[in-house]
Image (cartoon, rainbow, N blue to C red):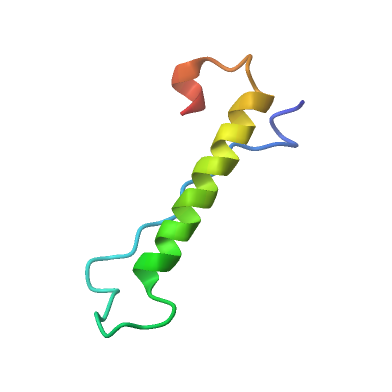
Length: 60
């Protein structure tokens, strides 16, 4: 598979320290970030399996 057609997933941007208001929001930025991070890790693992020819140090 061509890397241009299957780019390596990019990690989500973590929220800044002041982004969470600590008021118990239903969609807290910290929770949303954690969900995005979990999805990124799954996507990265799948991408690495599709690109076993890429050296390990370039895959992570």
